[in-house]
Structure formats: C-alpha cells, structure tokens
Image 1 (tube, one colour):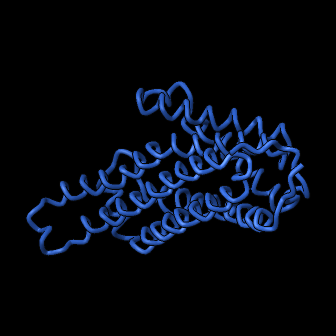
Image 2 (cartoon, helix red, strand yellow; image 1 turned 90 degrees about the horizontal axis):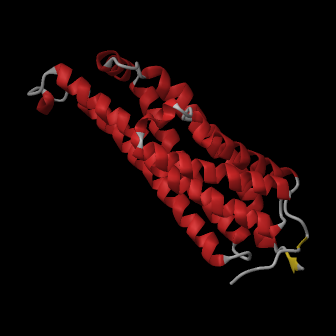
Length: 238
C-alpha cells in the first residue's frame, strides 16, 4: 500500500472546488448570458442584441476567461493527485486539458471581435452594416468551432484521468469505469462530428459530452465530501 500524502489531499480539495465552480461558471456564461442574445438564422437581430447588451457580452467574456483559468487550476490539482499512478499519463492528461482551456481564450477573442465589428468605429464606416453584422455573426459562431475542436482534447484528458482514478482506488471502481466509457465516448463523438458535421442529427450533440460532464461533476462532489483514502492499494507506474 502507498500512503496518500498531504499535497494530494490539498489538491483533492482544490480539484473538487475548481471542478464545481468551473462547471457553474461555463453553464452560466453560455446558457444565461450568451445564448439568449443569439438569434438562430438572423445575423441582424443577433447584432442588435449584442449592441444593446454589450455589458452582458463582456460578462460572458469574463466567465470564459475565468473558466479557462479554473481549468488550469483543475488540471494542476489532478496532476498532483494522479501523478503517483503514472506520471507520464498524468502529464499527458494535463496537457490535453490545457489545450482545451486555451481554446476558450480563442472563444473570448471571437466575442470581443464581434463587439469591435459592431462598435460603429470610424474605420468601419467603409463597410455596409449588413456585412458587419454578418462578420460579427461569423465571429460569434467561431466559439462553436473552438469548443468542438477542443472537445477531443477534453475527452482524452478525462479518459486518461478516469483510467488513473481506476488504478488509484481513490474513488469507487464503478464510477471510474463509467468515467472511462463516458469520456472515450466523447472522444469518439467529437472526432466523428468534426469529420461528419451531420452526425449530430443521429446523436444529439448534448449527448457527446453530458455523460462525461456528469462523471466529472460526481467526482468533484466525491472529492469534497469523501476526500482521498488514507492509503491506496494501487500499483504505481513510473
């Protein structure tokens, strides 16, 4: 048996809180701030909403930036917890999650770019309003591409972490196995969707990552409520 040290216990608390807070922040930013402003199929109406609610758009940017920072904190904590199981895999998972985090910064830039196009600045007077609205909508839609480009990295990171959770015996084996399957499913769906965009007509795109998100949510609660065991029966790998 290997003893769980204090740094792992502290990291577990940080991982639990950061996992919950980042999920809450990104859900709030996407579904309560951004989505109500976007009118599907109507660039003009979307542009009008963005101009009329610029503070709301900028709050969305702050949420996305905070989420990105929270993911970095989470991946660091997970690396500390899971490194004893296999340092190479733990590092690979951290890097994959970092790539996902950086793409949220790109989403923030896309939103700021849309606001700039709709700012009525003097140098934009050379363009017709309809063209600026279409370009702004193009930038807003770029956030969709950013997410699905990052999703395979997020899924791979979660798959690796779930496998290391399984080896560690820090959380219930059934939960770990569910995490491996849910995360691998997400990676599969993300790659298929990037190759065949109509795939979401066969499998709803919310089903790509919802099982994985549920796994990470439950793990966050587990780490805060139960914490890590005193000892691990896992066999560590170099």
